Length: 158
Length: 158
Length: 158
Length: 158
Image (tube, rainbow over all chains, first blue to last red; front, side, top):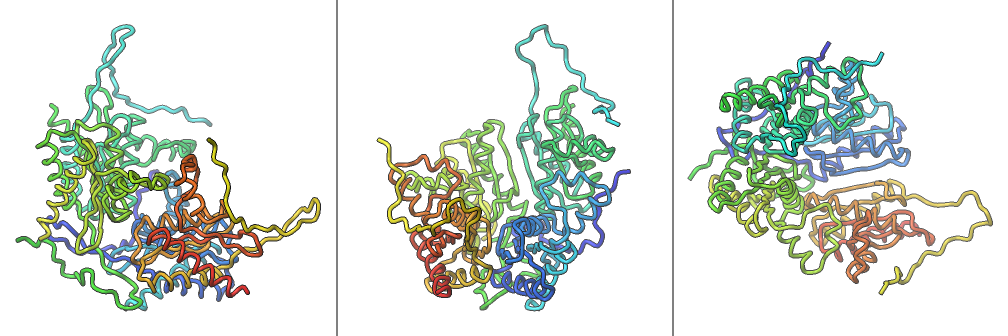
């Protein structure tokens, strides 16, 4: 049976564009914003004594900030970047792709993506403007830490 | 059990070649042809309010035209090009490879191909001369939009 | 004078950043904007009977639109994309890198860039938000056509 | 005439190894050490109002920390990482390779290296244990900022 590539609860609500608009507005996380995100993620990791690597990327997956904790493996560095890039370019948590592959849609293994939980999109005003990737714990712990980081940005942004 | 690499209903009917012919005739989609294809595909996408990316390639997978709609993700751009390239180089709808992998022939995940529905070959006079790749909806929607594009070329070609 | 792109939710354009701002505003060329650019570039090329390839990319070098004219070579397709990507990522006309290498700074040949004239940044409100790359003529002709394309966006933007 | 591959003023003084020693001691910059380095580099850049990207890598070129300032271009991010990697793997300032190419030894353009000033090795007890790469200003400014960063580590280490 073929599984449709459906993701539930898409929260993307694009602002309406004027007909034939030449440009559209978007936002980018500043370095200070990325530092806040990772400081909160690092605090969450430290609280749990998890050695982790952290990456913040823009909407294209371009690296803004990367920190590799002393307890993190070389592979954690690779994973943090790849998860962040995947979440940004697919505009969804990497858990969505992780679950898709787990449910049998293995064709996505051929894509340029790391379908493993722990990458979380940064959504502002209904638009994905970047992502955070974490690696070092279980993939659920990685996602928890990534979300703790993003929550810090949201708080500051409110 | 090994599954034979068979595709049903091949419609390729090669024109007879003179014995030891040195050259053979083929066709290439012009930029105007590609624009027609994508205009029709974009209309089909817009009618359904789907944010998509579209690619038209030649028989080798070389890019002729690419449009990334405003609602499309970065990954949709990658997928549209990869699906078109796969359909052109394998000379069949990417759904064939998609189904093949789904049926257990996972060895094709090692190939330089994206075995996901949404790439459709452009067939003229029984010869695959290029392909269209679409991404942004479900894979079935992507294929529907790609075929709507190709239909515009066929109409114009008749 | 037309201003087709005022958005309800539009905040500020290039406003000074508050100390420790978490986010900053930027713009992206829409597909319609990219089509306008390339239509003007294609008109300039056609007027001169030059067979060319055209690419429009975002600020990271991600492809938004690509057209390969019938008279363009396969290498022109590669060059158009590479020049656009270079102009976007270095935030300057590729002629700057071209001249730098010509003047003896050959170390830039080791960079991931195509230091050949014909890539022009798209600058809006003093910020580089993307680029256009053209290939098919002399590099000076390529740059002329790229600028003709960008001028069309600017006219609409005024 | 063959140019000898000489670098002046090598300061590497390896600690004596016991005959046939199986293991040797080394050091790695911690994440806190890397943060100190980049905080000092960022301060030096800010003082001069230079928009820059910064990378700290280990002795193999593996990324430990990366910050891309808001005024830095995408290419600055690429260059900072590449310069740091080059300085670490060649165990010398990238200016040495830069000068080598400038003096005619262009064969080094074929290597997996970025021979442009602005990458500085981190040397502890006569051993190169990592490197810092900076990009965003002139290459001499980049090197100045990288050295300002490393000086902070040295101070703290004394």
